Length: 355
Image 1 (tube, rainbow, N blue to C red):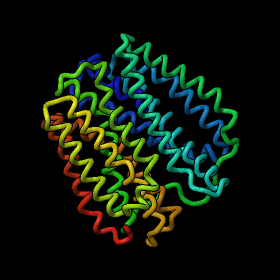
Image 2 (cartoon, rainbow, N blue to C red; image 1 turned 120 degrees about the vertical axis):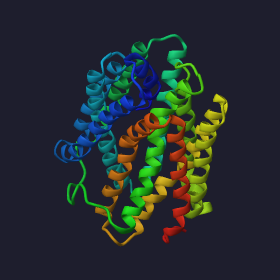
Image 3 (cartoon, rainbow, N blue to C red; image 1 turned 90 degrees about the horizontal axis):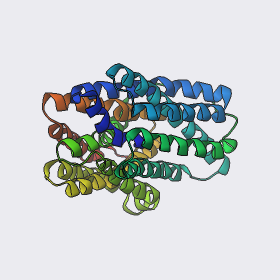
Image 4 (tube, one colour; image 1 turned 60 degrees about the horizontal axis):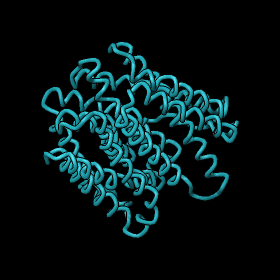
């Protein structure tokens, strides 16, 4: 997914489209993911994690290079749909396998898994930006990434679980009460992550005048600090408390986004995106912990509902950023996002379960 971030400015330039059209294309990626997420849960319970993971990764390897090559809006939208479908199925299935492994080991492992997901963000965005800086074309760079993923798939596939998780309980339920409130906060946090993924490179290229070959460094800075934050997050939250983590983290993220948007300097912008990453890193894990403490909805229903709202932010939110940027400008759209993060900080006091 992170390998797509440095390609966004190239796609925008290749097709000659504006922010609103790009936002519509990004909806295709989100639509593909939303379609396959519930299907992946069903397929995993019937076919096992291994088969669904292999099929998902192969679909990603097939479509990623095409994102750097297709030159019409229709075909790019179609490829983004299937690319998003592969990502959605992969995301759902690997979390199911992670839950099974965690249960079998009888110890907490999820933070480490998500931390390594962030490592992938650093390697994906930074690696593609590095290849482009060395003079590779986007086509050759994505072929290199796809080949590396295929090798890793061949090495790891024998260790995937041949069975899936428990299929009891509804796959989706409408959130209510505190679960709805937590879901809205997760929507804002995931929206922030999606905005940095899909729009940081465009902002650095179009507004800050950065070379497209280096513009992926914005997301790389964000992903790097989020990785460190997640890998050290459990100890940090235990030390300062959940409420301080949410309030301080959202204030830090809002400050970073404001710096990146308002200060006319690309090094300051990179620093700002780094602050967004460290600020956001531990808020969502705290929110999912709260989902297990609330009593309004069973955990088996509350967690899928919150997850759906969160992914709606990361998948559909960036398209909204594009529409707002078209009506005003990209800087105003990102500042609106910073204001929403301030709202997260203010609303933390309303979550009485926070320690």
